[in-house]
Length: 363
Image (cartoon, rainbow, N blue to C red; front, side, top):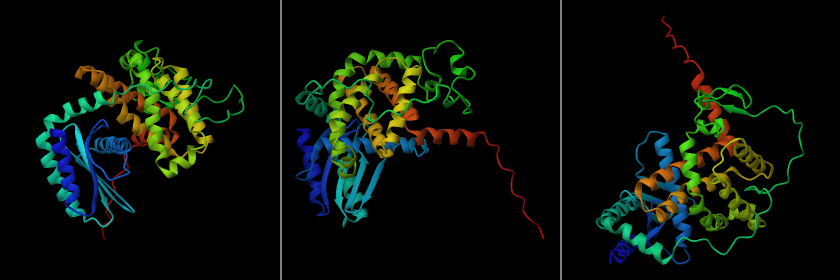
């Protein structure tokens, strides 16, 4: 059986050096294909972390024009994690001790990947068998969410004067203007009147809106399970756990409600305002930015996984995944103030004229 052969290759990798403590072959959407993990290591946690790291690595490589991602190296105080591309749909990770020699680690990992690729044709059938044995389904019914919940529960701010200055937004030329200013160019054609102008700024369009709404009945039953997986990852990290351990149930309920709201199909002013208020709640509660970044990284890896597992048509998979990822970009744009203002600074920098060339002095 190919799965046994893959596990044998990973076990051989572990045995090649006393410094290689564990290894696993993981699909790009976050499912374990085969593993040789150490005692106490949780497959779900490892796969979720590797998939999230892979997602961020791929995005970084693309944004910085470095081409397709080949490998990611993480070095910590107590050791290293090497993630290597293993074909088009999977990666292999090797977890090594601090004493590991990096040259040998790269060499042994590359040899293991070469052996793994001989069985690449079996990846899909192994994953299908795993999913059949452990289907993705909603857990026991979640408690009723609190009224108008937010991902981070916090006391509401006092009502402010209704005449407050409207928020600033970016138009398609990356110029600042108020939300009640002139019509956004993207709305002028009459096609996207139901969308808020900010949606067009991140590439989210009317077609995406229809696709997301069509996924509502499929995705909603899966969202409580998705939230449970996310908080399992968070609670495994001591620093994260310190911020959330006394309010996990409330946060889970709020997080699920937020996810459900993503599939309502309405991305107008109310949706935008809700996301911005969530960002303010994060700030008031002094939640570290890494919390929201971790959530987005997890969802960018998990959503395509759910789509692949529940939609058989590859074309429909690609369309649905693309719309979901653009929706997450939109939410990050609206919720994370640092991300938002970074885009503002980028747009302002693009508007600045190029500095005059320096003149050389002659003597």
